[in-house]
Length: 63
Image 1 (cartoon, one colour):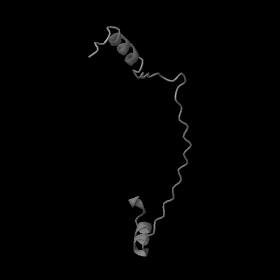
Image 2 (cartoon, helix red, strand yellow):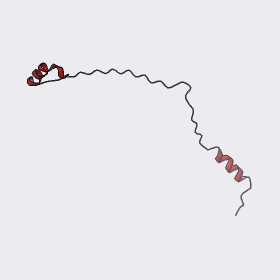
Image 3 (cartoon, one colour):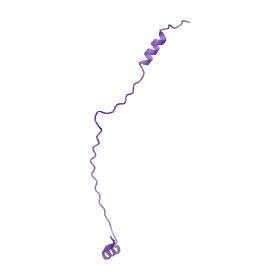
Image 4 (spheres, one colour):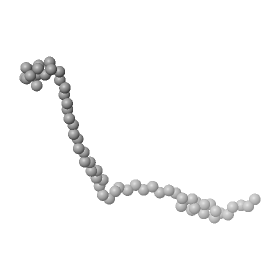
């Protein structure tokens, strides 16, 4: 059985230390801008019975 030389342990540590992944978080240099062009259209259709329509005409102070 061959004894391992003393320089193999430091060499192994040196080789394994080069494989450590590096993670870096950095803020962007320019601010983040969000451009939102939104167009909202709506239509309201109300169908009313003739009885309700006449009641609204007669009692116009309800609304």
